[in-house]
Amino acid sequence: MGFLGSQKSFPVLSILLLIGAVTAVWMASGTVPALIYYGIQLINPHWFILAAFVLTGLVSLLIGTSFGAASTVGIALVIMARSSDVDPHMIAGAVIAGAYFGDRCSPMSSSAHLIATITKTNIYVNLKNMMTTGLLPLIVASFIYLILSLIYPVQMTESILPSELNRLFELNEIVFLPAITLIALAVFRVEVKRSMLISIVVGFVIAWIVQGYSGLDILRFAVIGFKLEADSPVQSILLGGGMLSMAKVCVIVIISTALAGILAGTNALKLVEDWLKRIRSRSNVFLSTTVIGIAGAAFGCTQTIAILLTHQLVRDKYAQAQLENEDLAIDLEDTVVVLAPLIPWNIAGLVPATILMSDAGFIPFAVYLYLIPVMDWLQFKLHPRQLT
Image 1 (cartoon, rainbow, N blue to C red):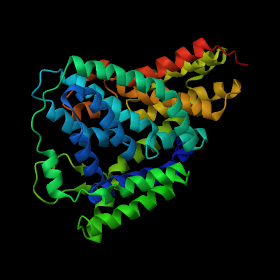
Image 2 (image 1 turned 90 degrees about the vertical axis):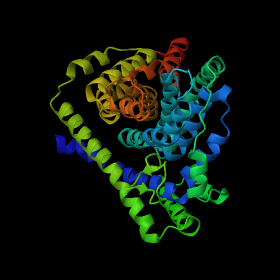
Image 3 (image 1 turned 45 degrees about the horizontal axis):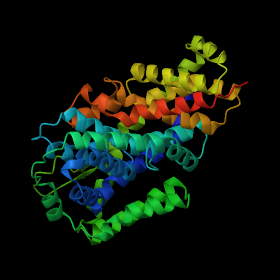
């Protein structure tokens, strides 16, 4: 049962490895450093909390990883705000909310690819749906962060990060080409693996010609992750990526799908499935998916296990109610994906919180993450729909 369940993970493993390679090559080419460098230049102390949300969201959208966004631009923002009187949990909450904006709807997001794979949907259709359901929560969350920014202006410490990045990398317009290439190919709906491979090639050429790394160095970065060779205070910030960094994620996905297969094969959760069969309204289907997603995130302790457990439990209900696979995919994205980081012991929130020198105190300030399911549920309540 476990082996049969784990087979569902195989199509997504190659994508996960490519994501690791893309992240490392983008660091070597100067794409990620440039995003951080120019983003920090735009920050105003009176908009700092809003800027933290927006800037982290932009970086996460481009690199597709909440952990990567938190450990690069996120930690830089926290350090810049450290000397102010503003609650550090507030900054961490805005950063983590922004990080999961991209983790949810980036074409390079591992969770987005996992959901597209298990629901047998097109990732670009899912991304379009995520933008639709996430737009109003994004506007409301941005307004809340703007109000918090005005009430609690941040007096920033002088950061050495911009000057160090400028010293270590050539930060001209060319270094944005790997990101622009990936976005352009996504617009034209080129197959994701092919898009990432092309972006890696573009980044490889820029890292070689513009940044001066050897071809062997770049290949090494793609496999084991990027690390600055020159001594610098930002060595501990600007590192990571690589296919090996995704090996642990791949193992988690394999084990999680095996666990889901065992639970399905043994009918261990039949009581929950029987309860779901009695639900008749669209709003209650979404609400039940939310509740199961929270329980899965609390029990599984990782976003991946939570996604797979929730999918395993609710998929038959969606089929019985004659809802499309795209409905199931967007409901998973709008519930378990964004709620897993709000479980204090789930690594989806615990890891970035630890990186940002915070703890569960960030949760009330990650407003974007719980606005999405709340607003979705309200929409279903305001436009009731009975199911078969």
